[in-house]
Amino acid sequence: MKETIRKGVLLLICFGVLAWIAACSDSNDSGQKGQGGSNNQNAESSASETGSGSASPSGELPAFLIHAGSEMSGLEPMIMTWAQKMGYPIHMAYKGSIDMMRMMADGTNTPTDAYWPAHSIWFILGDTEHVIKNKRSMMVSPIVVGLKERIVKRLGWDKTDPTLEAFLEAAQKGEFKFAKTSSTQSNSGALFHLAAWWAFAGKPDLWSMDIVNNSDIQAKVKAMEGSVSATSGSSGWLKSKLIADTDSLDGMVNYEAMISEANVGWRTIDKHTRKEVMHKGLKALGREPLHVVYLQDATMMADHPLGYVDKGNAAKAKIFEALQAFLLSTEAQKEMIRLGRRNRLLAMDASLADDNAFNPDDGFDVGRVIAPIQPPREDVLMAILDLYQEELRKPSATFWVIDDSGSMYKNGGKEAVQAAMSILLTPSKARQFKLQPTAKDIHGVIPFSNRAGEGLLAKGNDPKMLAALMEGIRKIQLGGGTDMYAGVMAALEVIKARESELTDHFPAIAVLSDGISDGSLDSVLKRRKELNLTHIPVHTLSFGSGVNEKQLNELAALCGGRYFSGKKDVAHAFRKMKGYN
Image (tube, helix red, strand yellow):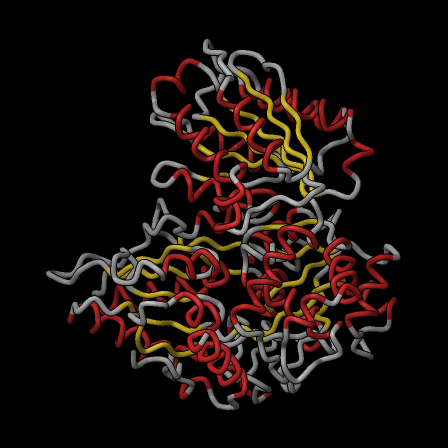
């Protein structure tokens, strides 16, 4: 109980400070390629997602691994240029803030040398061993709405800031279609979700379980989540999805910096070539840019703190101290401002703003005072996130296309698939990773070898039903050749037959395979058009050894999805993929 109270007090302190971020310390220190279009959707994975980004080798200095939120990938070129100059072998890998929170529980038994989540709250909740030191905010970015300019002007929101109620009403009337990230897998989604609770609760001074249990507030939050047209497991990928799907999406809820990058473009480091890649924004692609909308009563600030995992390694401590000093230097702060990040919690000196990144014509207002919303204490936060996952989010309809060909029996893929599916279908495991299904979730399983096998279908979250579905997956036994494209087309047919049932769901196809496939990707693309299902994303996840990543990457990229590599950690890749649906 004392620990919970202490954490709650720290959360309140964290959000009440008005200071330049160069002096903003955490109080707990003691203890992808492509130039646009569909290829942009894999920008985050191209940006060293697996942690392969490094500076030039430097004598005896150890490799230094940073786990950061996907929204940081646009800063990697700046960091790597500095690291190469200094001779520091820095690696950057990208994970969601909630994943990082869970990793922090490992204390010093982790390969991570520094964490860079989007918000201090994840340090407070995750660093239970108190091994993360020198936590300081590097920059800030509010969670805002970005909508096509014509829509903002039509609604009059270029002159008057709407309330959350007004935003929800317009979304429900079909004035626009917007996307947001998952509230249990991504920080931007979590902060917006908390801001909605706070606004619908009447902006209370303190959070309480009474607010969580209030059925009227729950109904409004559920309506808000139900108005979302597309979702994602990461803020960076959502930005890329918005650019690729600008014909079907009108905007997104995301960091202000991500709205800026969506408009003007951004640079990342390609994880294979180690070269900078320029990703074109909406303006360079000749598409309508996003206009920033600051909600009157539902704006939370991300403070992006960087903290060091103290393992007693003096060389790594030196690298961290140098990196943090660089990021807080005038030079780096100016560069981050040029890249659409703020350097102040409430309002920034307008003279510092770059008119390209913070274009006033696009609604950016750096002088605006944005008072931080105090986040809830730990028990309230976890109750809110569980409610979102189990009851309030828009339900998902995931059709798992599972490879059961002969190669999967030889390369360990079959056992890995079963282990991954058990995470989702075992209530205790699903709850641990905030993946628990709602009562309306739909689970489809289409096995395949050289043809599609007999499918399985279940609905809801009854433990007995989930156990029966898992048993059905274990009994699948096809063997033979491989045609994952036949499996995807079979899933499309099932979705088409149930189209009316899926109107209030997030439908998606998830292919679990080693990708060594016969058949034709063109046949899938053709069938998607014939069935008018081009809006259904197809995500892919590799299992087993000898994976054909090229086939899996192409299938995801051309079908609006994302490829997840299971080479190193299948369970993590699976959990991450589920966060996109």
